[in-house]
Image (cartoon, rainbow, N blue to C red; front, side):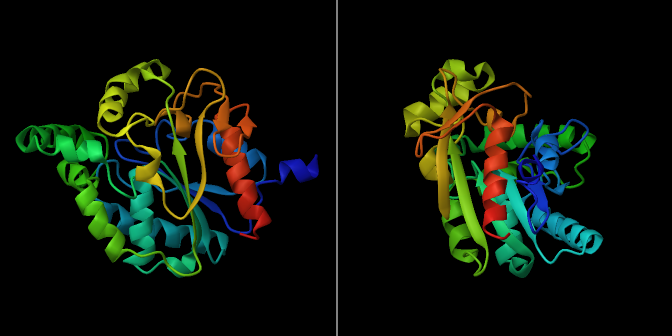
Length: 276
C-alpha cells in the first residue's frame, strides 16, 4: 500500500500549466487530477498564468512562478505537465528565457507544437477574428487577466507562426520532452466540441475537437488516447474539466485506464522511475 501511495512521489515537484481561455481558479482547471496525484505522493503546484495573454507574457509569469516554487520547496528543478497553449509557454520559458536548468521534464497534453491548420483557415477571416478577440479580451479582463491579447493568441497558434517558433525555441539539452495526443470518436463524443470537431475533421482528419495527433507531436510521443468505450476524448475531457468518469485507451500501446486521472498517475509514475 505504501509503495502504491508513493507511485507519484517524484524527485522534483509537479507544475500543472493550463491552456488558453481559462485560469487555474476559482474552479480547478484540472478537475480531479491534482487531488489524485497528491494522493499518490506527488507535490503539485499550478502555473497561475493568465487565460488569454500571449505566449511571451505568460512565459514571463511562469518564470516568476517557477522561481517561487523552487525557493519554497528547495528543489532544483520542476516536472511540468502542460495543456494546449500552455505547453508553448513552457517551451518559450525553457528556450528563450533560459530556464532549461530548472525544468527536468515537460509533458504536453494536446499542445499545438506544429500549429493548427484549422486556425490557418479561421485567420483568413481577419476582421471577424479581430472582433472576436477584442470582445473576448473585455471578459478576460473582468476575469483577472491584466494583459489579454486574444487575437495575438490566435495568430500564435497558426502553422506559420509555429514553424518560426520551433526554429527559435529548440529543445534544451537535459530536458525530457514528451507529448500526448487525444481523439474524439465522433461529434457525439462531446456535444460542446461537436462543431469544431466536424470542421477539423473535414480540413485535417480526426482530432480532440481542436488538434490532430500530427499537430501535437513533439519529443517522445507517449500515446494517442481515446475513450476505451464508444466515447472518445475531447480537448476538455483530457484535463478532466467535467470531473466525469471516463475510461481511456492508449491506441498505441493498448493500455486501458479506468478514468482520466489514472492516466496522469501513469505519466507521473514514469517520471519517478526515471529518477525525475
